[in-house]
Structures are given as C-alpha cells and as structure tokens.
Length: 548
Image (tube, rainbow, N blue to C red; front, top):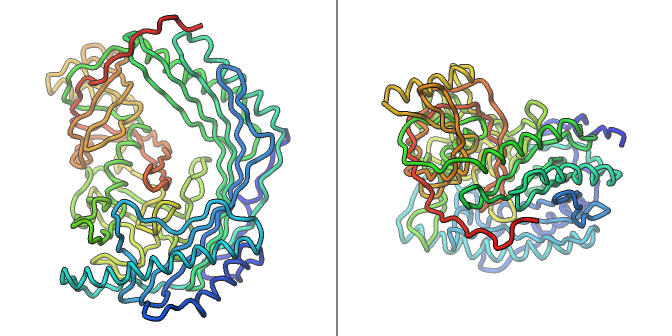
C-alpha cells in the first residue's frame, strides 16, 4: 500500500487566543446549544449556570487481529462513533458547584456514547445532557454550601479563576482508506511465529489504527479542534512455565501513523518478544531479597508513574459529605518546596508536545478541559517539588490555573499531568549502571542483585513482577527469575534513586479509574532498596491432555 502522508501532522494551527470558531457541524451544534443554555436555562430558586463545557469526540478505529496464524473476525470497514460530554458549574466565580461530589469515587460528566452523526441529532443529545448536568450542578451547589457552613470552611481562593481566552484549531484530515489484506496478512504471519514454542497457550497479534477528532467549546468562548491519531502493534501471550505457574505477557509497539509497517522490523520485535517468553518459561522462582534493583527504562516508567505521577495529580482535594478526606487526591498536595525524589533528577510536564523521538504522545493538550492554555511545568528541580498541575479552582500558593484540567467519560475535570519527563542531572552508561548495582550489592554483602525489565502494578505498596534478571556479584552471570512479590514500596523509594542512565524511553499508561492516558519518559535508574518475597500464588495443575 502506498504510504499515506498524514496531513494533520503538518497542518498549520491557529495560535492560542486567536482565530474564528470553525464552521462545521460540531461547532454549529455546540455553539447554538451553548447560546440557548446561557440565555434560557434558568430554574427559579436554583443558581444559574456559571460555566458550561461541551466536548464531542469522533472516533474512527480499525483493527486486524490473529491468533497462532488464524485471523480473528475483523471488520472490513473502519468502525466509527461519536461521544458527547457535558459538564457545568452552577453559582458564581467565588462559590460554585465545582469540587463537591456525593460519591468520592464516582463523579462523571453527562456523557452520551451513541450520538447521531447529524446537526439535529447532536443538538438533541447536547440539550438532554445539559439538562441532566444542570440538575446535578444545582444539587451539588446546595450541598456544597451546606457542607462548608457545617464544617466552617472559609477561604479566599475563588472556585473559578479567570484566564485569557484561548483557541487552537488544526485541520481535520479524514481517516484514510486502507487495503486491509496486507495488514491482515502481516498479523497472521506474526502470530504464527508463536507456534514454535510448544508451551504457549495463547499467542496473538493485533494491529490497530485509531483516530480521535476532538471538538471543545466552553461558555467563556474558548475552543479547540484537533485530531489525535495512534497506530500500534500489540503482542499478547500466555504460558505455563516449567513449574506450572500461569504467566501473561504483552508488548505494545508504536507504529508510524497510517504508513506501511516495516515487516522486517516487526518480525525482529516479535522474535525479541518470543525470546523473553522462552526466558520466562525456564525462570527460577524468586527468594526473599532486600537490596538494590536496577530498573530498565520501561520499569522506571512504571515506577515513576505509580509513585510520582499519581501523587502529583488531583492536587485539589474534593469535598464530600460522605467522606472526611479525599482518597483520590495525590500525596504531594502538601509537599511543595520539599524533596520528594532523588536530588539527581529534574522533572517536567510537557502537555503541548505531540510526539517524542518519532513516537506520538497520548495526551497532547494545547488547551485543557477548562479552556486554559496548557503550560509546560518544571515540577521538580534537584529533587525538590516546585509546582503541581492546577485547574481553575486554585490551591494555596497558586495565582491562576496552569492549564492541567483533564476530563474523560469517567471523571470531571481534575488536575492531571500529561507527558512527564524524568531528566537526570548526571547520567551514566548502561555498563556503568550495572557495575554500580554490583558494587552496591557487594557493599551490602549480597550474593546477587536484580534487574527489572518491567515494574509491578502496585496496590498499597505491594505488587508482583512476573519476570526479572538475577545478576550475580561474583561473575556478572544472569539468570531469569519469576514470581517476585514487592513489599512496602512507597513514595520514599523515589528518594532512593542512586544513579540514572542515558537510555530514556517513552512508556504509556492508562489509569483504569479515569481512563486518562499519560506518558512517562524516563531512563534506567538504580534504586537503593526494594524488598522482594516469593509469590503467594499457587501453580495450576497440569492439563490432562498436553497442548496439541
């Protein structure tokens, strides 16, 4: 197939704060309904709408999948759908309904996932969703005011801070028509490569092309329009290792959007994935360990995402009559000016970066979801926390929003990071990092240390790594290990980084609660101390009949 040059990536954009409202069905419907909302939406005895947002996302997606060489039933044509989200603050700038929820873990905008693809259909859906959110906003306003009186909460910070008007427009290029046969043949061939490993219970390949066209308008007159394309190959597998433990492994390989994939390169990536599966099959079970661990870039990304990014997000705690404290608020909200990470690292958030080293980034955001220009932040300098992401509802010490309000179908706008760069002040080579690991192990009298290719999914400081390398201090020999249960991993571990490499990679994560995606760009790092215990899982019985 001919290479498709995706014009969206080179189209000129209107500068922030300039340009007319685009003339298309989406903005006509949103603007007409917004005007009606501002002029007519009133209920006697209820506060008036103060701030309203409409956000419409047109999604087009096409996936080609196969398992062990056999194709899945893949749609011949791209699938398309529209989603519309509405949220509203009732009251005024000083006091409005924002930041108060009935249920601390369930606070959604009014979202409609099946929107008719017409002006009339979109108007009708926006009208219905606006009506729903106005009722909810009025209820939240009354409860919030009562709660603040009951708790004697007084502060001078406004619930809504003003910001300069902003806009961003990038031309929308239609999702390209592709000949699906070569893509299906490619995933057939890649998934068939799994047949050579007899202990694999599943081996699948999926190539997905996806484009989100996003349209945003708020009652302050801020708006944006742009596309977010993504293309990737996903390899997924499951196996039973030699001791009978079931293990799963996935790998996501980013591709250039809407261009013919390099078959040789993808075959090589699949071979690397299969080699790792072979190592997992023959791995030894972990033993108790307390000592230094070298995190490769993907593992470092997971480490920083869970311990830093999550705790920098949600800097303004929610209020609720159902809970005294907001368990969703990040731990760093009270730590401005304090050292929260190793002095060897600086940390930045760069929301307006579309790609890095040729890889599209998942959270490009010229304006945030409250219509404020998204600013680059230096979060950390020499380990000290300098700033946090903020929204229009400010936190102490902040004079205005820095444009980090992010929303999804599952959450109202809250302060959240986007593309977080962990930049070492001094970096060393891969070989030097490994030597530093061995030297530290010798200082502690340890027979071996660990190297993690991936990090655990933590819950209350505990999680399991299903594969790692054990490296011996005597001769540098490595052997694969499985079933490593991490204990007591907290934000304290961020300050235990002893050294960092120069091999940074992009890791993408999606929060399972909010469905917001983040990118962490980090190099390998050496962490001084992590506690490891053997897995508590039990092996499954062997099948009565071996694999065919």
